[in-house]
Length: 201
Image 1 (cartoon, rainbow, N blue to C red):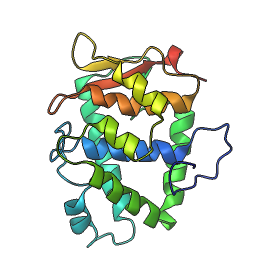
Image 2 (image 1 turned 180 degrees about the vertical axis):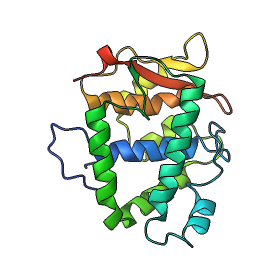
Image 3 (image 1 turned 30 degrees about the vertical axis):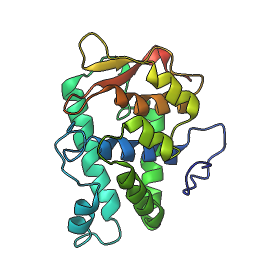
Image 4 (image 1 turned 180 degrees about the horizontal axis):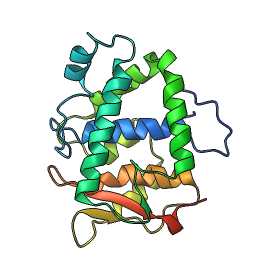
């Protein structure tokens, strides 16, 4: 991966699996109760969660914490808005999800880069900072994605963000799905989604 110190060893023509995981980590951390109050985990991906989990899972604690928050964030997003025939950051095309799971499993042997990334994510999540700024500072999204997301607005229901122009590649689309959580407010989750037919091949 060019933007992270983690390498997924994938051809350039394929989606960057490490980037998907990093985007999920950042959005998951941002949405915790001690940050933007979107899902009911409190600091699990922060220093408190690390302190508690490291006692029982010294090597894999970062992965254990992440899996819990991913599941909670996914469930909460579905409760708020679960569009049919659509993809979200937590529910990507099955072939991508399968490869993400494989990559996640492969990472268990080398947890240090992911622990470092979690630390950097946590340091970006300061009061008053928007998710979009944090993702940009972490180099998880491109400038083009940032500018595009700034023009997005919540749907009339205020619970969703319909992305109708997700870019030319699956990687573009996934960056936008993550960054568009920026359209939500503290305590008010808005779920970004892309219709199946609009998702780039």
